[in-house]
Length: 473
Image (cartoon, rainbow, N blue to C red):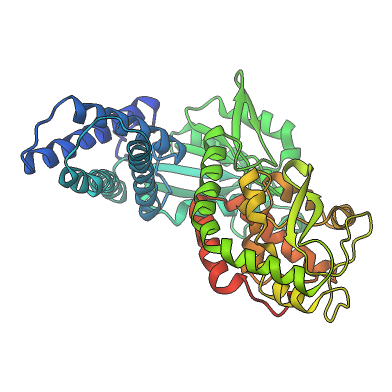
């Protein structure tokens, strides 16, 4: 006889549940605005109704971009709260910028807006937290729980199990690993299999047919396609939910995304984080705002540096060199000239310690990274970004792309004035392949983890640790 288990009463997240969550958040935005208006004795008229509609639409766009309604199972509460806060602040900032630039003729109470600005996102965060806490309590007390088993006692199965068991509030109960290779000890050692396998596929099928298992995760390698097809056909003689976990982690994934083409699933292996128009617009807006803040501060220092270069050594003030930009297209990068030569051909020698080509003033400019300041003009023109992988000379690119696997992937984004590699100590000469590999590792990690928050963090850290370095000469 089957052992009784509490029945689930909450269905897995469906689009209609996402719509309910969106509707509840929209209602909170309206309620908090109405309360703010009522507290300060204002009248809820067409102006405030229009403000509510525009804010709600913009918040919904940014929330979709932040994947707030894509399900929270496994997402830390803090991350969920940050995404909500950022979505609301960006929506509010966009509206505020519009009122500042354009005279729309609307008048709003400053006190109402100052109260509504924090009240709306805090209310939404509290609602999400309450919903999460309630469901977590129910699941941890045996309600709406699901039993699962993993077919494939390999490293991928172990990673999946660790991810699920670290989150007990999900209500998932692990029954064990199942694998037909249970008797082949040498193969288990070769494939880094788990130590304890509770049974083979026949045992798994029997338990699934008895209704003891809700979900089965198949983590067998991609080369076992025929075997997987056979197993799925046999599991069709049960009511268990079958999930295939493809081992894409054998590839060096970068911004991997799941999409579909007329129902055909497509997984990108190498992609750019700026694939959508919204992401690209956000990155470009970030660059323009940073330029607007920084250029007025550096304009006078740049003028003095230009005069100093002209006085102390013959030659042009600006050194222009062809480098690779986004998509590997060649761009012209500007720098203050720091050498007595202007190399821009197929053979460009890296600067070394005590390099005779470096002028006395140029040595100071290179150590302090002041020679990079003209690249803010590159940012304004759109060929570079404030934050991104540093551009290398064309000759260096052609050399290292043959030496380091994945080198050209760093050109999935615009090159930057500063980057994750620079604040991580990867500056100056790369006289060994190991040093360049370390730099490329940080560049690719930046592309994998890109966000506006990461960019701002890099900008701030650059001020304190990215300008000056003993390795820069």
